[in-house]
Structure formats: C-alpha cells, structure tokens
Image (cartoon, rainbow, N blue to C red):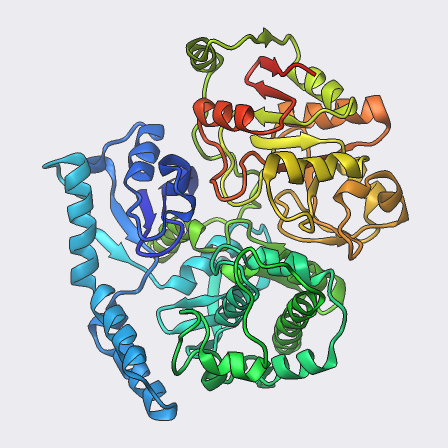
Length: 575
C-alpha cells in the first residue's frame, strides 16, 4: 500500500510517503518555500519532493490521506457541538462567524475540491488517487504509539484542537488503540498556552517554546498562580475544564488568541513584541508552565491508576513542551515516557497515513530510530554550488575529525550533512555546533549567529557514555524531546548546555543512526575528555532550518559562523 499523507489549511503544512509500514520520505513545506511555518499554504513542493524521493508519480499512490475528520462537519456533529457551546456561554457575532467559517472550510466536499485543484495546478491533467480523511487525534495517537516500541502504554494526544477534541486519552495494547476519554472545546490546554504566549509578547503557534524557556527564570508569585489557577483545573475524572469566559469568549481587541476579559483578569496590559522582558513576565510564564504541568499530571495519575499502565506516549502540539515531558518522567507517575518528536501538526501528514494504514490492515509497532527523512545532496552537487559561489574550500579526508578539532578550538561550525532531519529540532544533519564546555561560545551563538533572546537555552548532542555521565535518571532520548535533571558533573563540565533550572534537553546518539555526526562527538570527546557538544538548528531567528546547500551558504555568510562543514567540503572564514 502506497499512501501520500498531507496536512494543510493551518500552520506547518507537510507531506509524507508511507509504503506499507515504512515511512519513506517526509518534508515540511517551510523548508522548501523558505517561509517559516508556511501558514495556510498547500504543501505542493513537499508532495512533489516525497514522490520524487520514492520514485513514484501520483497515479502510483493508492490513497491521499489528510488528518481531519471532515465527516463530522458534513453530518452536523460539529455544528451540534458549537450549538451546545453557544447555549452554555454568551456568544458574540465574531464567535459565530468563526464557527461558520470552520463549518464551511472543513466539509469533505470543499476540502476534496481544494486538494484536487492544488494537485491539478501542480501536476496537470493526471489521474488522481482517492482522497480520504481520518480523525485528527487518532492520527496523533497512531504516530506516537506505533513509533514507541512499547507493547502497551497510555497515549496522550494533547493540542489546541482537532475537530471538536482538544485532548484524548488512549490505551495502546496488542497493536490496537482503544479510546478512553476526550476533552472537547472550548476547554483546551493548547489554547491556554497559546493565549499566554501572545500575552507575553511572543507569537502564538511559534513562540510557545520561548514561554517554556522563560519560565525557568521566574519565581513563584502567589497572586499570578491564583489567577492562572482560576482559568484551568483538573476535573478529577481524567480530564480538565477551563473558564472560556476569561480565555476565549467575548471581545478580542488585543489578540485573536485571548479575550479582553483575560487582560482584565490578569490586571496588566499584555506585553508586546520587542518590549523588555521583566521579572513579572518571567513569573507569569512560570505560573502558566506549572499550571499546565499540574493539570497534565493529574490526568496522567488518574489514567495510570485506572488502567495500571506505567508507560506513556505523548502526542499533539502540547507534547513539544519538553519540560512537561521531563517532569512527567521525573514524577514517578509513570515509569517511562516516549515523547513523539513530530508531535505537533507538522507531523500530521505522517499521522494521517499511519492512521489510514492502521484502519486498513494494521501497523507494526517499531521504535523510531531516526528522523533523517528529508532532502539530501551528494558531494558532487555540493561542490557545484560552491564553485558557482566562487568561494575557496578544502576537501576534507575526515570531515568529522576536522569539525571536532575546530569546535574544540572554540570555533562555531555550520554542519550540513546527509538527509535533512524532520521536525523543529536540529539532530545533526542541519546543525550549528559549538563547545559545550564554554558559556562564552553559547552566548556568541545567540548574539552573533542565531540573533535570538539571550535567555533561551541550547541543547547538547552526546554519546550514550555521555548520557550515563551527566544524567542520573534518564530514558532513551535521541530526539531532544524530553528534559532530564543534569547532575553536578554536567553542571561543571558542560555548563553551556545546562539551563538555569538545572535541566538539559539532550540528543543521545549512537553510531548506527548517524555515523558521521557521531564521529564528531566521539572525536571531540577524545580531544577534550567531554563526549558532548552544543547543537542548535542551522538557521537564524525567524527563518526555517536550512535545507539546500544554497540555504547553508547564505546563512554561513550572513552570520558570525567561523566555518562550514558541508558534505566533505570545509570552508573557513579568516580569523
């Protein structure tokens, strides 16, 4: 079975090719369009690339699948749910207009016509495969559980919303997923976090990780904690509730993502872009992060006790909150946590194809080993680009060894190798590398290369030996999707990748998944005695991670990078 999964009509459109049980190719539209998040775009470039990577044309595909259950919009189930909300809470014309927009936009007929038009525009008059729609949260749950390698586990899918559902709990066992519980709009943890992301002066659906990082600098503020607690709380039945009248209902003169009532409730005008971050902002970020964790922990405790299951898979956009994932692991509520690394909607093209496959023949549960699923370039292709740019370079006989030597000398190196990694984290294919021992190197990466806020943390890539050295309590962590408490040795030896709260979000790598990148870390360990380097994404603030050699060259020459290791070629700037 050859399946083309797509996701569009929102942020982070993408395409995936799944052949039988194998995920063959995946790419986000932003990496090809060079427009961060590509909001509202159709993944035309992504579809063309994954088909090319698989050696297929559209007529070879058995089905196109999207992770949106449009039948709920067709048969009135969503309209009925909206009516129930409107009866329970005072409603404005703007609320009703937004609901009507979704009811029209997400009907099967309209979505199918949109997809057909986009494909006809790109591929011409060709035979198109049948188009199918699957449940949004089932797609999230399938992607996480069947990549976990767990024979049985709880599965938590938690996001802003998918159809009318915002949070769902599942039991995975014996190759099957059983739905346990759903929380429905207007109660949404994703909406709460996005509301406060905008309230604090960042951009919703982009800056949530900034709120998470900023929270580490906050201090407990009882007044703010009480105000946030009045907005959301566990319901003691395995779910939660929110106060929509303080969050999402009513006039929105500040932001689409929060109401004017929230401003009045908090008692202070929201921050705005480029304003200074104060202690009050840090304390509010901490209150929001802690309340999110309190609610999620309460739900997890309920379902762990009810089912007896001691392992947890996390999916959905809120699963990008790595601090929540790490504290769940530390909590003792469960014994192990697998946070799916493509848990937000950017991975829903994969989830759609897997959910369809699950419904039509089943899926094997295999532990996800790597995410190197995107475009790659040969040395010959890279050298043609370098020649066209007329830049001097050297061919390295051992690019891993030479890169490690430069990092050990304090240089900051762009690293462009193999097939591009999927998702928001750099995993050693499109990375910027620096010395994890040196806080000055970390600060220079922030100030002169990434051009981002100085309080945001950086992450380490390390060998398994490094993980054993630096984390006393850990689990498998190859994707930077979970934090661990760093021990004293870590704080002493690799301070550049330990956050102010004493945690670190590692990529633990072995030789089998990315031998060239593993070679850099191993050689750096041989030179310095520290088997760990600082790794951040190869991009600057506001741009997608680089995809092509041309993207890498532009970023290299536009920033303070000292060197670029691209394929077997090494470029260095004058001192």
